[in-house]
Image (cartoon, helix red, strand yellow):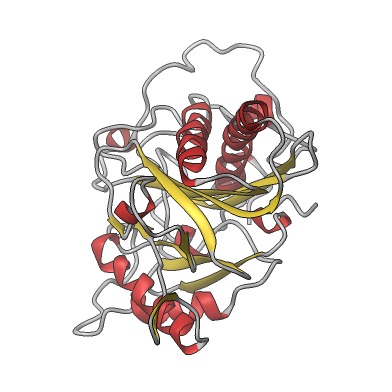
Length: 332
């Protein structure tokens, strides 16, 4: 177990980052098409092809999932990934034609200090294609891909991942780009809200503070009197054979990980979204017991992935916020 979403057999992740832009793209690429659904609980989402993931619609599987910076401009990343998939001969077959299905979600990172004057050529299509072509079971976390220019209340955000094993042997993992309006840490302390779920000191091993007075104070990007918009976008994936309705419930339960790792979350100014996906390689036993355990662990791995994203963020020229390491750790 690498503590990555790619611990689910058959999954790979690719990043493409642009340091000048302070933005990027992350793609989840399966060996074979994935069954998937989605849950959106934030008030300001930006998405592509998410309606087809609802259980009542015909398309049963997708070819990749895309997380991107760039606000609405970043939706072009899915087009770049789609073209790369088409070149591989992949896609939903309609007679002799194949159409790759690539749902996507974006976060707002246009005011993070990067150079967004890209002229007439939207850079996200090329970034999407590059991210898909770079997909590997081994990938980095922190200030990469869709998390390149992400921010939270008072600290840089980033790209995180985590995984766990179910009691029946199935695997579940999370992948998340953290650009939240709220905070991943408790008040002015280095302690993460996700501390109760931490495994093997994966984000510092600090646990909870002895004194939690003031931890419930609402700290957002507004407290720093800086403009910006916000979104945490993520994916939970498993090899447990879940249908679209069960994956919808898995995505809903995974949002508990947002609520346990970010304060506040699911606001009117966050576009909080979770994709849920299954490779279907492990047969389900008890449909309720297995699905409930998967949902609980989905929330846990998501909370851990969010904390890891912030913990592993790195200092970059032109940053508008400090990293967790620079403020509380050994710096960069």
